[in-house]
Image (cartoon, rainbow, N blue to C red):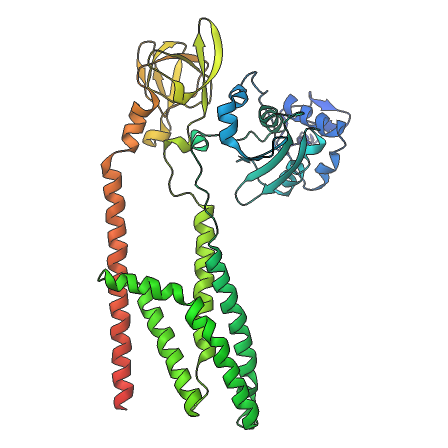
Length: 444
């Protein structure tokens, strides 16, 4: 009985996905689509094929050719000036969000863009944020050309309407970092000067013991008066507002620990707890610094602008032109292609519409619309090309009004008040427990 061999599974040399057949190949390398083959040839032509040694499946397939004029809006000076983060007149720096970035190979390829385009000076990847910072020469390259190059190699930049707003750059609180540095330096040295007494078991010479204690006292002064000042200010503001915030028990612990330590050292009755006091301040500040970085990495203030594209194709007198959606007016004829988001409410004028409203309603089943029916902003076209006539501009669209409803703000306020109430009860419970413990041990 003859056993038939199972068919050999072909894997795309570029992206690692399964190949439907062996029709697209180059020498002994198979590709799942012409896009992957084109990217391979592009890398091979520029001597970047070491890219394929970084991972087993290092690439990401480019299945769609860059539509002509897709990034035409980037030639607009107003749009360009909003997206450029820095320029000296010759070189330009732009930060682009690339959601397709997923592995070390992506980083390697994106940081070698200068080898694919001579006008690009350098590129640097921020992998956790999925962003790339690109510096290019304005005379040899353009922002549009950069976007098209990224799309060609499979990393289409996500440029949303939110990017057109004036960006509020969250600067790192330099004072807090300085407070953290001072607290860390003093805490480390206080611990070092405390080690001899910890391990001496009472055999440390009195002269050295007093020297170390007074050095600890001197090092604790900047921690108490400078590094911990943030907690004092926050606690005092809470008390003035008749609200006990979480900083109140922290300040109480710092003050009691410090005053008790000063008393013991000056009176010669003990060594104090200056290491504990400085440790409290250092670790609390460290936690808040990391919290700041976390909040900067996450965006909590998102609205529809974070998801809408900057431009849309407008048809006027038979010509197609990429136009910023902020310039759309009632009566404009816009062209929406497969996979594009509808930016404004409009009436279907031409084509077949299969709209995915999951962005608005959460329901992913496409809704079929016929000519003459209204299509609301926020839907995504799942069919072919269609034409809409704008009936309401972007700020007056259904999605914008839905996003701005007061009910969402009311829910947010209620959630905040719940957190504040919980914080107040926690502080009172903590102080009550501490008072009971003090009474019990005091009687003993």
